[in-house]
Image 1 (cartoon, rainbow, N blue to C red):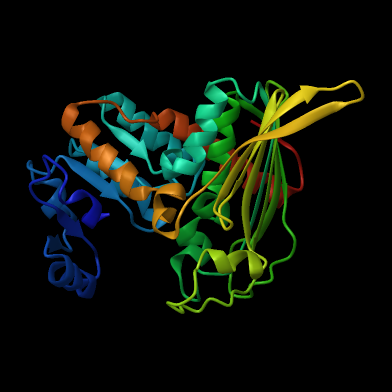
Image 2: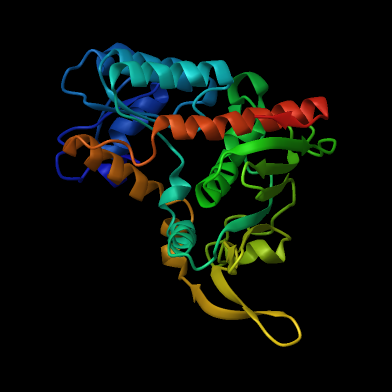
Length: 340
């Protein structure tokens, strides 16, 4: 993040904050930025206009509230908080102050997923009625990570899967009515949180979104610089694939095969037909912009704050995604359908 924004026009200085003294020294030495372990050194400095909150999930709400109270513009990583009540409190605080608050749903900046949104906005898919997401990956958080603990991470849905709930909301454009989720027993023995989910969302307009997530398929990559990290994922049984189906056509995005496909539906004497009309791919060097594009998001946030523009996505819109996150956790724990 620091490397992405340090040379942006209008950025004069960056101050990094970390509670770990060794990390403070590392930031100073490796990135050449000012660094401190004192929140007051950042929040009480009138020259600091924008704060990026990228701490562990349980710290998001208190740090964001403190920054808003200090009069800063804020980018808070998802999830907003580890409880819905705290997430609501953060958004209300920003609205009460008329403050800039953008939540880090950076997939809305992904070249892959913005292409889907553009096709939808152009009417090429018709009304989106069905989305399916399969996400199969390895356990990459590792032992001892705060992400694996309920107290600090708040649950895997908020930590990892909130992106993949936010995307269908963005594409379908209708409120979600009901959520149902189930989890199989964990395979990763040291997780306090679920390592798998099967979730279904029903929208008010009748559309349905499905999400399947499994986080324990091993990989063979092991950091070999001669191997293509992304290309080896499919062979290892990994998948990150969306299918977005509308009344006029469909799209498939396939991250690990670096591919996006679009079909048009049509009529024929004997049956409905579909025709592949667009296919695109990208190079290894373009992966980051097609996947999460965090750099693009962070540069845009800096530009917006300097220009006095509002967030690309209002915080209250992000809060609606958080409602679905907590509804899925509630459904998985209770075994019941949750109405939103």
